[in-house]
Image (cartoon, rainbow, N blue to C red):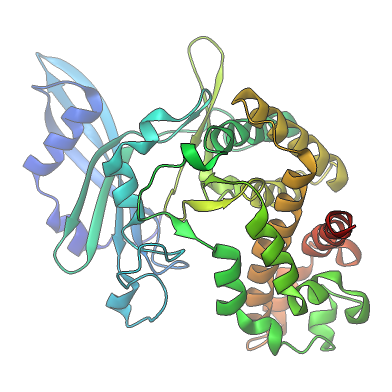
Length: 380
């Protein structure tokens, strides 16, 4: 565990915590007796995240001893850190708008997710003075202890497809003003390391060994062709941050598996297929013994089945382009960002970052190759 932030600990008193725990247990007269707090994460990465904390302890109701635990997620405006254009302004459509997850939980939108997909229960979502927000959430353990099979990733892809499918026409997308918009376009402009990164540098060549034939690099140079085509695709509401770390598998009493989706802060309106890319990338990183092409095809097949479960009958080729083009841009730009930052530091950082990559066929190049083929088909 990381060191506890005592200022946060001291701001939570017994009465406040008691009210949260009563909601979590659905016991109106429950009284907590003792508790402790551990920091689980936060403070690095996205500046909106201040920290993630688990409060746990024991208490009683009518003489019955009960253990309990809840999660506290603390958010802040990046402007508190002096950061500009990172979601701290009043632009609610900014991809990183800091209040979005608070507003999502307050709206009740997550109470109507499709079969198989759920969000953690939210016991309280409040904004505090100083551009700070607090979410009290359900504490959930993964029934697979995080060791997912290809079949479990595929089920998550199907659940995401169901979610994207129910909002796959303009008439079904709610008119909330805080949905993120145009994230791929924003990232191309914001993460501009690709314009200056030394593609011939030996350390860059570890990931991109043939710069002259690098379809992802070419895609960045011709980004408007892809962005304009993505703009023409059917849109839906997307989770927006579908790396496997944001999903928990929960087995119900009837044996069914639920996918619990965490961290909704990057929710937005994006093309169908957008939500699949990061999940496929993460599955490829985690399932070392399975061919990457097999992972891609299985998860895409299940995602399309999920769309159909929700009555969405969009051309699979459109979905495939939304998936491959968004995946190349979203995953690839983040990789270029990390690589660009690593070039400023030691060789060891770059080595650790690249040693697990199949440099002849890295994810974003593979996705860009297929996106180019599909783009040609659309233009024919």
